[in-house]
Every structure is written in C-alpha cells, then in structure tokens.
Length: 265
Picture 1 (cartoon, rainbow, N blue to C red):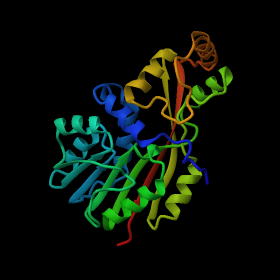
Picture 2 (cartoon, helix red, strand yellow):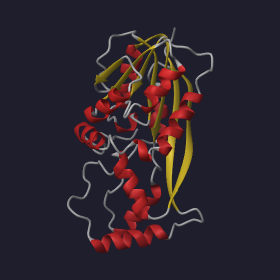
Picture 3 (cartoon, rainbow, N blue to C red):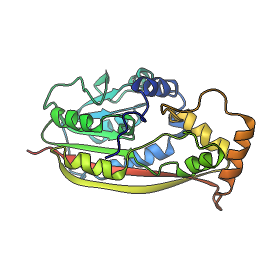
C-alpha cells in the first residue's frame, strides 16, 4: 500500500488554503457539483435518513442539497477550514455547523444515519482513521457515501511539469488499490467502490491554474518548490501542455472514486 504520510499536505495548510478560497470556490466548482450530484444519485430515491452529516462540507453547497432532499431530517455540516464553515453557516441548510477533523470526529457514537462526503477525504493523510470514525459515528445500518480523487488526476499538468523540471507541482493522491484495500479492511460492507474518469477542457493553461487556485486546490504537497516559478519555466510548461491540446481545448483529467459503504445492522 502506498505510504502517503510524507507526501500528503499538512492539515493546517489544507485548512488555510480552502479558507482563503471560500468566497471564490462556488463560482468555479462545476466538477465538484457534478461529482457530488452523481454521488447523491447512488442513494435510493426512497432512502430517508433522519440524521445526516455533510463531512468536509466546504461552502455548504451540498449541505443545502441534502437539506432539500431530506427536509424532515436533522443535518450537520463539518469542515476543518473555518473560512469555509463560516461561509456555509451564512448560507444555511444544516442545524449544526461543526469545526472538526474527519480523522477524529467530534461527534458521539451511533449518532448519524448517513455520512455524505464529496471530494474531501483525498486531503486526509489517514484514510483508515476516516473510515474508523465514520463507522463509529454511524448507527447500525448507517451508510457512508464518499467521492475522492486518485492517482491519474491532473496527469497532463503533472506530465508537463515533469518535462520542464521534474519537481512536484501537482497534488499527489492515493492509488485506487489503496482505497480498495482500506475499505475492504474497514469492517464496512462495501456496496460499491468504483472509479470514473472526468475530463475538463480549458482555453489555456492560465484558465486551468486559475481555477485550481480559486478552488484552494493548487499544489499543497510537502516538498513543493518554493518561491516564484521563473518565466522561462512557465514558458516551457505552456509549450509542454500545449502539445496535449485537443479540439475542445487543453484537457485536465480527474480520476474520481465513488464509494458506498454500509455499517452492519
């Protein structure tokens, strides 16, 4: 299994980066909304939990969607980024807004029937702890649905940087096999665990990097190059990425994991 302890970003960096992006996030979050909706679509239409948690709620977009889908339920929204949580609270949707860490949830055991988490757990260093905490917090028969990113995400940008200087400029993610192994050993019943490929297209490299920055998802990895990236390297990067241009524009591939796990009744 891949050891990501030394390559995933520090939680404080993640929280600070996403807090700064709170006001710009929703304007450029098209992929995030598509993935979150697909994740919701995996739930049966007649499924009606009475208590749910939006884990890694971000700006609260799906907190509000969950509230509309389950109007009689009691909803909670949790995020490690205080800036995101403040923004989510202002928009409403949940009864409770909680600052906290997915690896150590500040919630009592057997307190939730559904945990929904879309494109958040890829930032967690210890996914086994996330699974353990989700299992603890869910009541028997409860469901944990999540989406995440795996290796192959932003491969065009990574490969282009490799041609330029060989340094780490793109966030690292787990292998699909890591998710399979960790979910399989979690004690959950794995209803579904699959990978889907999503490809976005951008007019130019500036559009892509601008969107990543607006999302707070630009390079957060330890070992990333510090200081300004020189003009010569940027020109070389643009040239390398332009060689990948398609009819629709410059491609940016995302490898998305969808997981549906259930706690034994």
